[in-house]
Image (cartoon, rainbow, N blue to C red; front, side):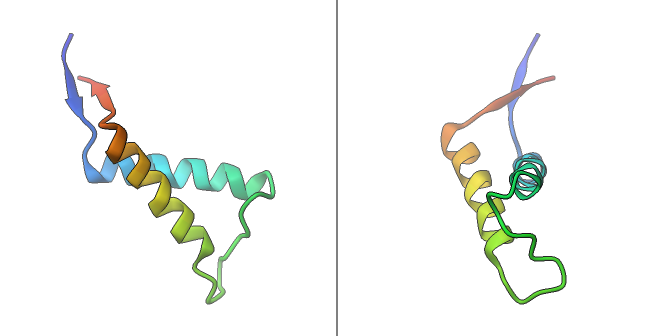
Amino acid sequence: MSFKKLDRDDRQEIGIIITNKLIELGFVPDCTDTDDESEFEVQDMIAKVIKDLELRKKV
């Protein structure tokens, strides 16, 4: 079993999934069809935390 570092696409996908859950729970506003960037800022912050933690996935 080997592991590889999560790439940018992996981190972004995880960020999207977590952000969508936070929207569903009411912690983050749904910014669909608005000029509010909050949703995307949260998504980017999550992806950065994942990058900083250097998480890996099983391959």
